[in-house]
Length: 178
Image (cartoon, rainbow, N blue to C red; front, side, top):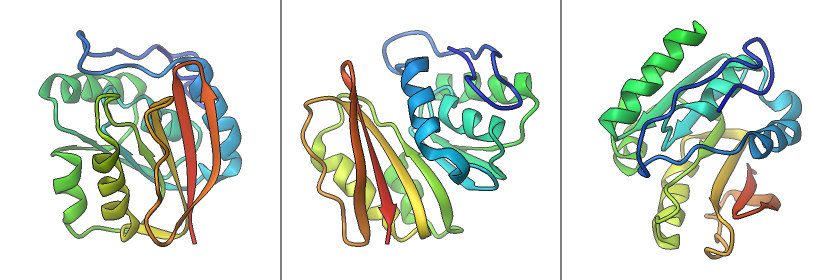
């Protein structure tokens, strides 16, 4: 796993051992960031279910202004902190369950990555999107990564599906805040 673009292009990232965290394939990450284009530059990024932090770190490499990484697993947080240090990026690593974090008040964000475990049930993912909606700035983009064929997400009021693509066993849905 590596950073595929920006100032840290080609730099390798560490990933936690075991099946608890699954790294995103580089080709999927490249497709996501190609579709986002200039949206990343200067964005306040929120990386939910961050794991190793590869999506938020990719955003920082491509010019995002800031990134908050939310991850519950202690092992994943340790690797994420190592990756931040290795790349020389600043970012806030939050030890919390995603639902608990989203119930707190916080600043509005412009770009969010939602990458729940493939085992997360559709109602759980829709609940997270509902909680997230109030934390989004106008025009914010949400990128949702799930197992292909695991059910079509019904976005909460205020979010619209802009694009949905399949990459092997992965499905990436891009939603936009109205």
